[in-house]
Amino acid sequence: MCADVLRVLQLFMSDTAARLVLRGTLEPLRLSAETVGAAELPRVIEALEPATRHFVDPARRPQLAAQLRTLTQPAAPGKPLAPAPKAPAAGPELRATTYLVRTESDASHARLAARMMCESMGGRGFECQKVATAVSELARNQIAYAGGGTIQLTPEQAPRRLLRVRAEDQGRGIPDLERVLSGTYRSKTGMGLGLLGVKRLADRFDVRTGPNGTLVDFEVWL
Image (tube, rainbow, N blue to C red; front, top):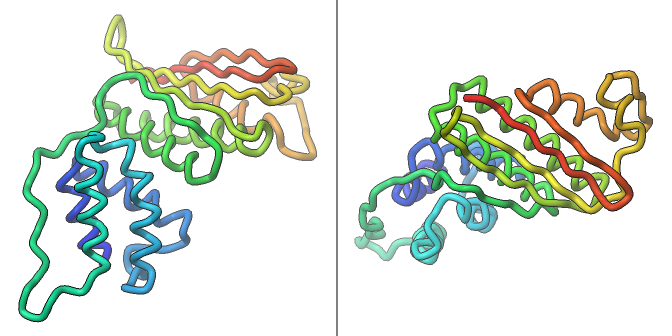
């Protein structure tokens, strides 16, 4: 079943993007490519549609959605489903993109988008993993402590190649910020611990926080 889903995704995006989107969709559902059957397929496809939104041109999204839905429909006897027309595969555009983070699914999409943008810029595996991990930490903190926020990804090629991440929320701020960033702060809730991890992963890091919200700005050099 997942092989059919992957084949459809590959018609609308790069192979790497298709595999990352499928994997990132299955993980929150606690499914694996080997365990997805006909009963689980509608749920997978429903979760896939918003995930693919970040990687497919808006004009082609209805075609992708329709093609995915055909996978849940039995073919007429003697008449197999017609494949979608071939189209050039393309990764995400290298431009600044902002993602709204409200749910775990949103956090997963932002993490996948960050990894894909890093790979599209020629980043190595370790560099792309750093970006994805940092974005995931920030997004989860936004959900847990600020009711959500936004993650903006900005690729830059000059004067040096890097990916800049700007995470912003309107929460109550981070108490004891200096102690959090020094590694001496211990919180019963764990608040702020992920922020120190982001600082250690980043090549440039800045954070501003107060009663009206928190802004984290960091770069990973590629």
